[in-house]
Amino acid sequence: MSTRLLIHNGTLITFGAPCRVLEGQALLVEDGRIARIAPRDAIPGPFDRVMDAGGQVVMPGLVNAHMHFYSTLVRGLGKAAPSATFQEVLDNLWWRLDRQLSLDDVETSAQVVLLDAIRKGTTTLVDHHASPHAITGSLDRIAKAVRASGVRACLCYEVSDRDGEAIATEGLEENARFARRCAAEKDPQLRALFGLHAAFTLSDATLDRAAALGRELGTGFHVHVAEAASDGEANLQKHGLTAAARLHAHGLLGKGSIAAHAVHVTEADMDLLAATETFVAHNPQSNLNNAVGIADLLQLAARGVRVGLGTDAMTVNMLEEVRVALWAQHLRQGHPSCAFMEVANTLFVRNPELASQLWGFPLGTLQEGAAADIILVDYHPPTPLNGETVLGHLIFGISQATVDTTICAGRVLMEGRRLALDVDEAALAARSRDLAARLWERF
Ligand SMILES: [Zn+2]
Image (cartoon, rainbow, N blue to C red; front, side, top):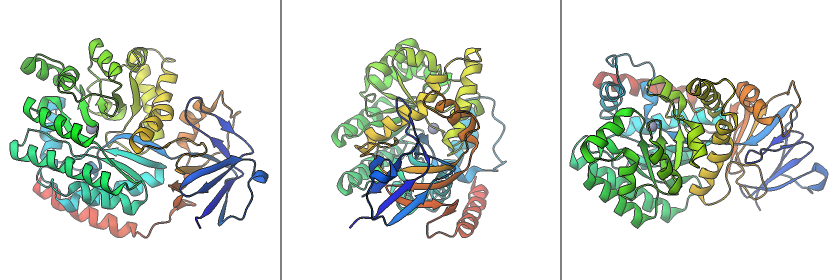
């Protein structure tokens, strides 16, 4: 018999469109799904567990649409030369770093960041991984950390030609191998996409090989698109096409694909992204940090592009990211009250849609039949909380509150702010510091 968990006495916030606020409703979890949402008295027992969510809001676990677990060990690294352009950020930091990553670095990075995700209530993460001198088996090592953490992740290896043909081939094979593993195992915690770094570091031949493999495996692609203006310029100069148009020409855009960033897309690119139903992952904190510009969410929405929210490894706290998305868009548009719905929709509508599409069942919303990925957040609303005001509460208030309990697939991963996992956090951090010190030596 499966475990029956009842969560009652809280205020339910459903996400989705419309994002509803439900008072006086309890939520029954059974078989890893939300089995019932109804008044407490209408749900018959017995229950294996009852959680009292008094003084709390009950929300879906959050979804991060673009992440790099591997960047964990860079925190505090001061050796990178100062960079004046985005290309220099890549040359001086990320491409020097990822070449030095070992499989142990990769797995430990994921372990550290996944515990943080549980603490911040993020239960689904779409990762984009690079470790050019430790490729084969890297996705298995990340998957091992994901399985142990109890959250969900969609993994891929970001293929690039920047380290030569042999390494590009190894990346293609790692994507294919892991996608086959996922298809065979059908583990509800794991999904695969086919990863590509960005069009400007990929030859036509490699793009064609990726497209053929992706078609054969039935996976979409996860690729950086027009993060900096230089991506478009390099593709135009060498191939006569923008990054998005070139990816499209190779059959890499589509409903199952994620284009991260889309900061420097043309109107024609936007129409292409909309027509192919490609999902755009907006990453405002990263874009601000790299000074590359901010995607035009108003134009993207007006042209029908589906835009969700990632963090590009700046944080796992999605409510922090959505706040910054709003401030950044105000600055981008020079207008202090624009784009509220366009920004809110990224995290509360589009990310649940993306996760549901990748996983093949409803994920990221509170509704009967959806995955029981649920968080309880300490929050006494100081102003009326209802369907009209809920998005304002989420962005301005709940984003500043503390996640108390995190549940994924019906499994309690954190309760009362204490991790419910068999993990020694201090020992993990010590191992991570040790690996980071050695990585920085090699850097
Ligand atoms: Zn990225």
